[in-house]
Length: 297
Image (tube, rainbow, N blue to C red; front, side, top):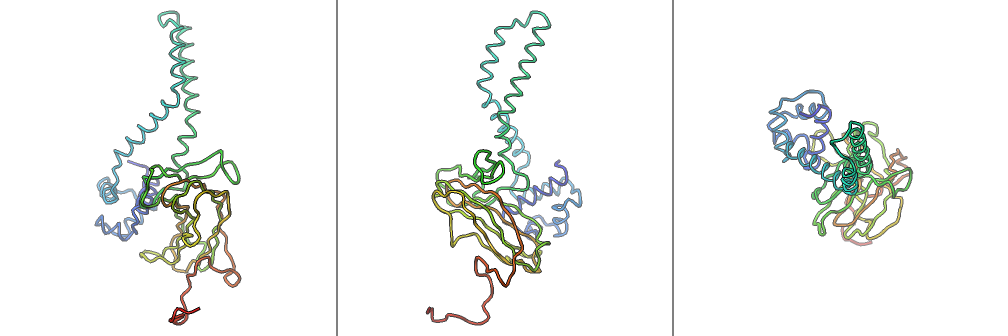
């Protein structure tokens, strides 16, 4: 069984990846909304049966996923130390394992050294499989990979990347995060970030969505569909400005890639802006009266 905080985070990620609200998940599992909320917030430790029901409703096989993760990690580890294995075998031939203890100790030390080097070489690969606070979603999440890039970045020492794995993809993937909207209620916010693109066949863009409390209602949304990133683009600053109504519950945001290609994402920031001086990047406000009914200019 996962530790309770990790379990709650996992269920939250899976629910969002399946595009389900807490209400919808509760209905699928025949559980109360409050139960789902308490599990995701790590307020309770659910019974094993309850966890199985939730995972089943989210089409997630915990046991198989763990086995796959372990297999992938070990497979990549041994693949990366193939050269060292050959050298190690050569060194073993130089030692007679039936000789004195000192030679045995020397061989053991050599093995430890090579394993340590192998772990160091695979450290970047393993780190690329997870970014604290972020997860992959979309309607084709398995067609994309993501991680940290320590050689390409705008600021600091690394950036996040989202890259297609399949040659053709009819859909999209997104590297995203969800947080509480509590600090921004009733305010207008600007999300700023830097994006670099390579071979983007369809389009890519930053996105920001504001959701209401305990309902399916989407309060505001912008995914740069009207100003997409395509092809090859060097680092460029982009921004999204949206209102966060008082009834807001969460901010959902990230970088999305539709089709194939690769994008890098870096130096993301949020700030509150003046509503009177700052326009929304995408028109969200309700018209005061019927407008442009004859489609004229």
